[in-house]
Image (tube, rainbow, N blue to C red; front, top):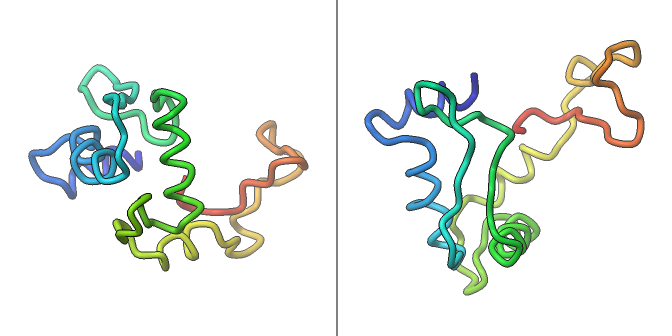
Length: 112
């Protein structure tokens, strides 16, 4: 549902195109990235992203540097990373009796 909402906000641009033009090129990725899509060609949200190892490493550095590319240019505000990776409250935690619960990988954040 997050990808559908994002595409609705983008208007006529697909989420995959937005990411390619807005982030992927800005981090210096060399190969095209792709994402799994559904029958309506809508990106499948928080999964199914495909990239080369080198480009995925560039993306990892981009995240570690809170939205700055290798040249030091701020692409996404660093505050977004602070908010996106912060646990919010017990309502965000997956209950222990849920099949998705994993004590080694708590998923108590909101931005995929």
